[in-house]
Length: 347
Image 1: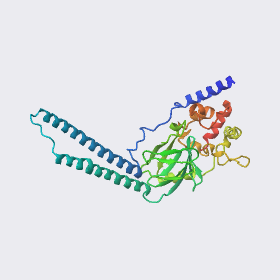
Image 2: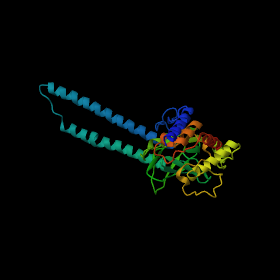
Image 3: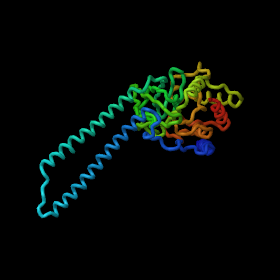
Image 4: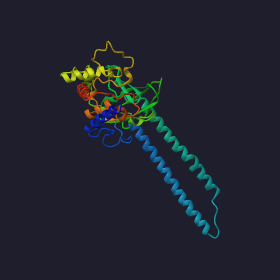
């Protein structure tokens, strides 16, 4: 038993060393910030935040000024031979204007701006041109495009300047989808369907995350949003609708057989394989792998997708992301290399 554990550990360690930065979660340059909006919905939220900050800072400054004035006036009154009491009329005016009128004005401005922002988020510009279904799972994002019949786990593609409607569901516990640069947070609640409209005004890759504690690997439940030109998006859709590539060499063919014999097909969908003899009832346990090698990340956004990381994940996924539903695979080196060669063809 111990030699098997040692063998598995050595393969995982060697694979992660080959990746250069095996277990280090990826992160794009600069952390995503809700105050750096790249879409209209995020801009509405950022503007509301800046307004509330400005009003809060103004009130704080006013209180500090009044406090200093009161302290100075109290010192002068103490030093005077005949201190004068504050006039009752002056006190009443401060209570009315400073304690009632001013707070009502500030709260009214904040309330009005909040209602206006919520209305803008509920009624985005123009109808949604693309519909996407997102299901939160333990701990990854099941992303699919029902109209196109494709699935892109942990990765959402959208055309620039076009509203995309997300249908949000949860398969287990409460999750919360958040792309700071594109929109605010929206919960995914079991047995309930929520909707969110994303729109990116600039091309780029934006990191999203789960913003609701959902279990052991909540911190490693990320996804990527790829905003691209409409022509590039349409080309991507066409490519994603193709079935999985057929192996073109003996190693890839052997890798396909390893994929089938190791039981991967009982948790992962792969369009293009013969599914007649496979029980598909539990296939949604793991991500669709039809176009695995075209994606940016694996393991729920935890690792960049490269050969070393993929090998380490297959052999010892519990070391990389403890508690995930994928069991460690006991493969010899030849089978592992063949499987990796086959997975690399899934573009």
